[in-house]
Length: 148
Image (tube, rainbow, N blue to C red; front, side, top):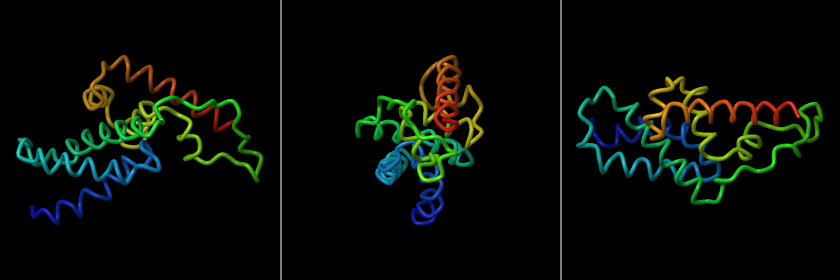
């Protein structure tokens, strides 16, 4: 696959992964992920595993960029307006901004990408129990914030 074709194929995919995790810095995370992918492309032993391999790199870069930009500590979720308040309704992005990057990452992997728990643990380089607990807390915080 030519580099331009690879870039055209991966960029939108990585954007869907990095955006919800790194938020406003999503494009930076995509760029950093692409750089890492191109630098280590020779390390990819199975070309059919490209998307999974790229996803793992993208998640790690998105979390790193989000931490760098100071979104590593959660905002207080209790002060969010109720979704029934039309003028101040909470949208998904607003709720995501209030979660730490590690919680956003596990939500993206498990709930958006459908990645199995063990695979998510490998991508995030944490034990599977940590993925379980982060996912539980992330879903609970998201739900509480969304329902107001």
